[in-house]
Length: 125
Image (cartoon, rainbow, N blue to C red; front, side, top):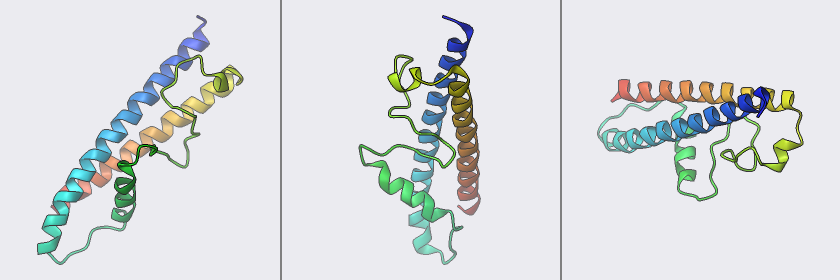
């Protein structure tokens, strides 16, 4: 395997791990949100505006076709496919690397945003 293909595979693995981390953080936010709902009944303050976005994500989580998306992520048919995917075989290696790097960057940004939301919920708790 040439080094370019190895880099592409490594980037795919990183993206898959980041998607898993995003799902875990979303689950933590969902748990905190449900705990917060109980506390919210007793208190009169409101949560920040991003709570509606979180609730939309949580509402879709139970659906089998739901997948995490972000405006900066170019969505493949299946993010956890191996290197035999015919769609990526047609792309030039430079394009694949740029695409995977963009997805990786977007995933890091999404994780940072979710962590910030998680901290905000903990502060308000």
